Amino acid sequence: MNTKKGFTINWSAGVIIGSSIPIILIVIGIIIAVIKEFNVRDGIHDTTIMNAVVFGGLYLAIPCGLLDIIAGNSARSRGLVKKKVATTGIIIGILGILIGLISWFLFYIVSSFASSFP
Image 1 (tube, rainbow, N blue to C red):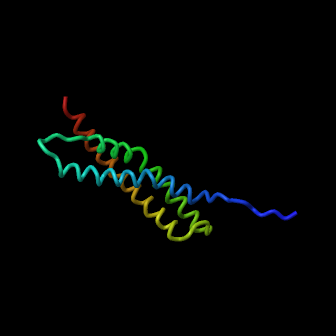
Image 2: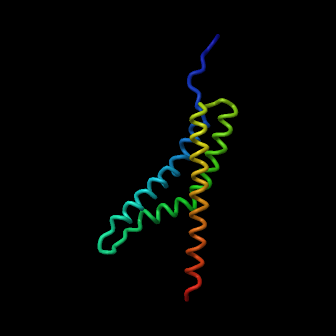
Image 3: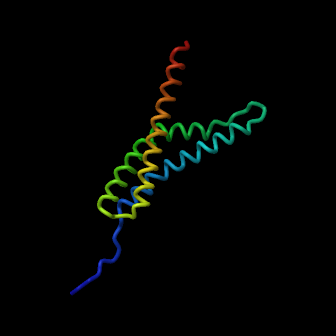
């Protein structure tokens, strides 16, 4: 009895897509925050999106970036996905790590200023 394999799940493509979504949302949030900053009237700022971007940068960007890079390298070396998909995952992973490092650096700067005042 010969049976065909029905459907195989490509885990690497799922990991690349799943871990790229938070990084892409962080980048979209940064763009929205910059646009809102330029359109401020009467000095009233809504910092909701900025807080969400900083939170995402602090806690999601580096782990998701590392997952993207590891899954992209693994998938590219084994030939599980097309090279364009793997390269895109690696680039988004590097971008995520950079965003995470920048947000941790900014958090360190702000926390050092906040702790110096009584």
